[in-house]
Length: 245
Image 1 (tube, one colour):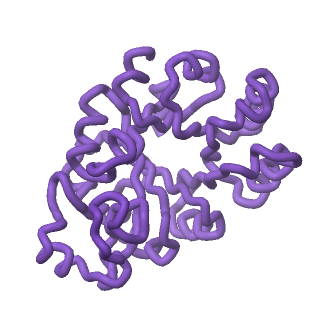
Image 2: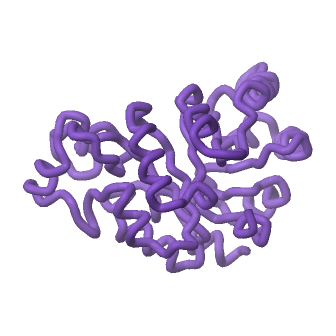
């Protein structure tokens, strides 16, 4: 994958410019990319009629104050409510159509039922070499391995499990089971393990051939300390992170 091999670390704009009213919108993605971020991280769910819609939550209450459940609403209904647009809801297909072809995209699977449709979209845009598939639902990831030739970029997301007793063994078990391209880890692991122990653990993972993605890292000082073990940096502050790099 020449695109990845040419860059030591990829900065991915988390939901664009992070949490808030415009998260997971084209507006937010374009802003994140405007600061030089190499790509974006986004969340996908499925509408009632099978469209792959971008949203972190199952409903629109937090971001828009609307009592609308996406899985119970069709794309046409969302459009009729004037909820589809540049600074509003968008689809995964639209992201691949509208953003530059060199944009790296981390597709976080929030709803496992979206997997078959995500696969169809990736095939349609021939985008497997610039797409990472991540999820807290680890068992949905082998579907991508089975569908795409070679080693697609699957990335189990691990949060609190790494920040408790037995965390390193849990991480090793996930890597052994799924043979992922990357593991996406909460940067708070350094608060639990301490900087040196955390760095040592991640060096060991990378030496075994698995890449490391850290989220959601917004601290410039921490970036300087961990950049040697970080292949993907997921951040709300692509402006500040690119300034450091």
